Image (cartoon, rainbow, N blue to C red):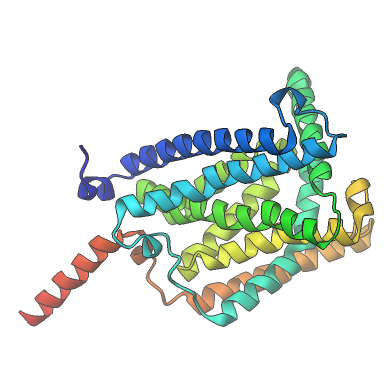
Length: 326
């Protein structure tokens, strides 16, 4: 049996524990979700692709909710309880941070939207070499299927359905994915590689890869890295959670108030031609300036403190105090 002390000293063991918790939890919650959706909506795996049936769509939404909770929320919470006596501190949920940071993150996500849309366009227009044409066909078929499912999800029947979809698409992913990737995995990767930048980008890569949407891979990885740096600098998981929520929530609100943008994926909200490139450039420059300001406000914090287990940190403080008294 591995002790808690041994676990806190080994990023590899922490990674294995996290994988184990994710596997057990997602399987368990998926089974529960399938049982409940089958009873509630007459849902069955053989009808997955029948997106014209409203009952199937509602069943898929419920199954998505159960799977997301099982994969993204339960494992990091269980991990926090397992490795520390102070799980909320271990997951950096106890630090609310300075109010100015929340305002800056909100402005940052809004300002960066045009630049991110340009990165999305570039990634979507990616063409693989001829010898990988069959792979590209498979990737585009997968992307098309995911897009169809997204459009089916983003259908509304009043304010109640808007709140429900906001929960599924924005609230649970923002909290859960940041708990798993930034709250746990990023810390493990930084401790493992002994380099915060390497740890952040590895985590961002895994964050994007898990979504299995190839033509949105690079913008999602970029977002993951940005959320990682927000967490690194602020020491509060609530900042990347807010950024993540704004990113996903704006899509939900846009599809609710402007459904034509979802139906016509060729619509470019920022126009075309040289004017759009000016918009993208300004978005990048101002986004970078806001990011620099966030770093400057939070630069006095010690990075190392975030990657020490709370129990170990408390012991280090006690030892330091004893040394000062002696």
